[in-house]
Image 1 (tube, rainbow, N blue to C red):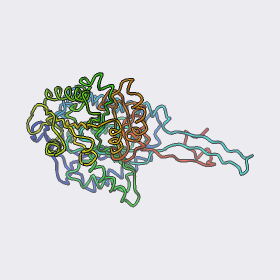
Image 2 (image 1 turned 90 degrees about the vertical axis):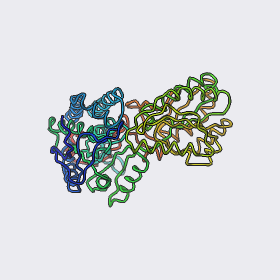
Image 3 (image 1 turned 180 degrees about the vertical axis):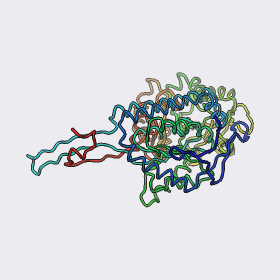
Image 4 (image 1 turned 45 degrees about the vertical axis):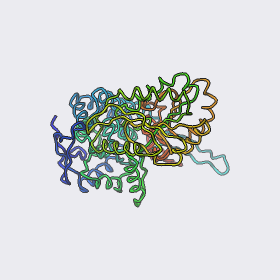
Amino acid sequence: MTITGELFIGNKTLKGENGTLTAIAAATGEALEGAFGGASQADLDAAAKLAFEAFFVYRDTKLEERAAFLEKAAENILAVGDELIERAMAESGLPRGRLEGERMRTVNQLRLFARVVREGKFQDQRFDPADGERTPPKPDLRLRKVGLGPVAVFGASNFPLAFSVAGGDTASALAAGCPVIVKAHPAHPGTSELVARALQKAVIDCGMPEGTFSMLHDSGYEIGGALVAHPLIRAVGFTGSRKGGLALMDTAAKREVPVPVYAEMSAINPVLLFPEALKARGDKIGEAFAASLTLGAGQFCTNPGLILAVEGEALEAFTAGAIKALKAIPAQTMLTPGICKAYQDGVARLVSHDDVSELAEGLEGDAYHGQAALFETTAASFLKDKSLHDEVFGGAGLIVKCADLAELETVVDSLEGQLTAALHITEGDHAAAKKLMPKLEMLAGRLLVNGFGTGVEVSPAMVHGGPYPATSDARTTSVGTMAIDRFLRPVSYQDMPVALLPEALQR
């Protein structure tokens, strides 16, 4: 399939004329096939108008038809075949196995939300019948949740499939009955085009209203901001940096009618090593930590960037295990030259910090590769310098040595909101862990034991979210079936004639 570099506006494609962008091979920095035309304000207006008009039809599609549409989108993505994987490999630098798994995650998310739609419980229908004998008389009340309206989705750099054009934000918004306009990520525009064609074809194949899906390229930052500011957009889904998320939140808040921005941003995902677990298997935990830290070149939102533990021989065993494993790990291609440079700068800041010691580096790579690094500091230094709390997006970890569990708890108290917090424990640590649980529940959206947060299961019981700045709204998740709730709102119908009630409430 030829990469055309076009915009997808409803069921049409056209070449954007507001500047151009070129895809870059992550491993070499060389230009890839295709010049992608940036969208203009007129293009955005056309997509938004189509989406708004489509909303009033799409929101009332029969649930079976909407579910079939999501399944058709999944089928069409699989039908793109190996071309999709090869293009994503070139644009992201991610290996084939990772991307094949991510494609299946993308497909399975769409299928999962198809099942959610068929089941219908997401509408949260409620019936409270009238009681004319009561004083005062009680009205007939019925409730259902409806879609918010057109949703803007921003593709993420680190998941070119699962958090991109047809990723979790798009799947959950479409399941909720909301048309979607995607702003493709500039790091993988060719991958985005191939997936957009699959979604556009699904809209046509299933007879969904034109405007149910559109995708725009932005040659700079203008159209991304204008998309959030557009009066016909009703919500925003974003996964990326804190700087980017805050900019979109600010734009949305300044609108004449503000809209919610569901932004998943930065996290360092602390790992708490309790004393008895360290004594029992400190070296093995260290080896596992090094593997998790460097998975995908450390470019996961849930990357375990911070270790908290009580100093002593048991921690030294963990550190030795981590150092040994880390030194053997090759440098890996990072998603973009810009991300690689930012990672290298972050590592350099830690290297030059007076209160931080560098413990180990992974194997060297070239200019486009991220070399893993492990550092340590004291709890006192960590508490004194807030810059040590900043995320270094990549395979860099920081061990914070605490004098005792009381000081470890003080460090936990100092942390910002997180996506995950991991506890490594044995039965002998249960009392100490239980004491910290209330604070950890306030800290992170997902708590896990004897593991690391880099695996995110797409499940009804999954939370991929957390208190600010991990996300903009700690009540939500961007992974799992609860993600649909972000794009719904409740409507109550009081004493409504049956003929005027939505079909689902006519009983």
